Image (tube, rainbow, N blue to C red; front, side, top):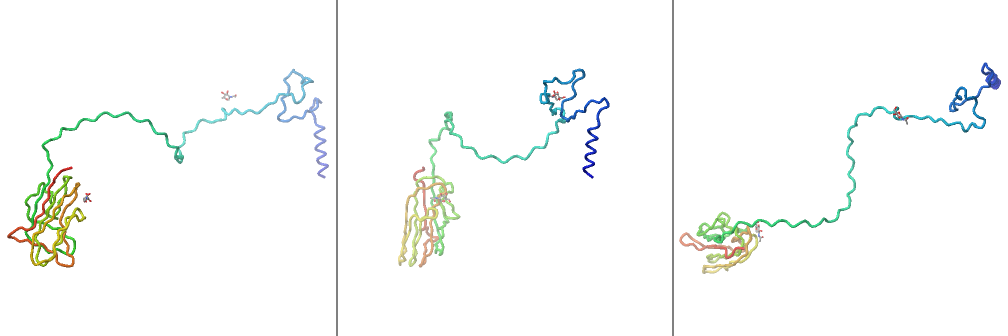
Amino acid sequence: MLAVLTLLALSSLVASGPPDGRPVLCKRCCDPLEPAEGSGAPPPSAGFSSVPEVRTFINMTILKGDKGERGDRGTPGKSGQEGPSGSRGLVGSKGTKGRAGLPGDPCKVQHAAFSVGRRKSLHSQESYQALVFDTVFVNLDDHFNMFDGKFVCRVPGIYFFNVNIHTWNFKETYLHIMLNDTEQAIVYAQPGDRSIMQSQSLMLQLGLQDEVWIRLYKRLRENAIYSDDVDLYITFNGYLVKGN
Ligand SMILES: *[C@@H]1O[C@H](CO)[C@@H](O)[C@H](O)[C@H]1NC(C)=O
Ligand SMILES: *[C@@H]1O[C@H](CO)[C@@H](O)[C@H](O)[C@H]1NC(C)=O
């Protein structure tokens, strides 16, 4: 049944034709247009393949719309790898000479000196303890701190220090001259039935803020120094020998 129908359709196609009786040429959409009127049939030499090819041309300029608005700025990209370091630059030109400073004062000499004493006896505690003083003979520019018993260096240089004490009979005498937290020299006397004067002296090279003081502490036996209101037995002295 299907075959019969197909056959009928085919025969009707073949049979149909223009009313003038010319044969119908099958045309594809891309075949060349009809030859211009009056030009007649294509020359016999021109075969089917020599007919100029017509290509669909799309003019993009026409298709393109108007330029759109500028978009938002994108987020910045990741930073790239670090490049190799550059070569060393040329040596710069020499700077200009600085101005001369103010003239110095030949009469200005730096001083530092103190001399302090103690009128009260003292039995030392078991822990470290600074010997403090109650009498001032000299304290130039207050370099000696009467509250904590420490000389604070404000003029760097070489200093001379001296300490004098009176021992207490049947008690030990055990003191150190300190530079900051380090012992520099000792004042020592064993217990005895005679109390005596003892002293120690030294010179120290001091820098700014260095502290010099006398330290006591109790070991096995009582450690004491003697003084009284009548006479002053205990003194601590220091002065700058030569500034830096
Ligand atoms: C495309 O169209 C534009 C605008 O009409 C015209 O100026 C341009 O010459 C055309 N380009 C081509 C190749 O035909
Ligand atoms: C002593 O202590 C002071 C204050 O802390 C410091 O400036 C100085 O350098 C010290 N000196 C020494 C010799 O340690």
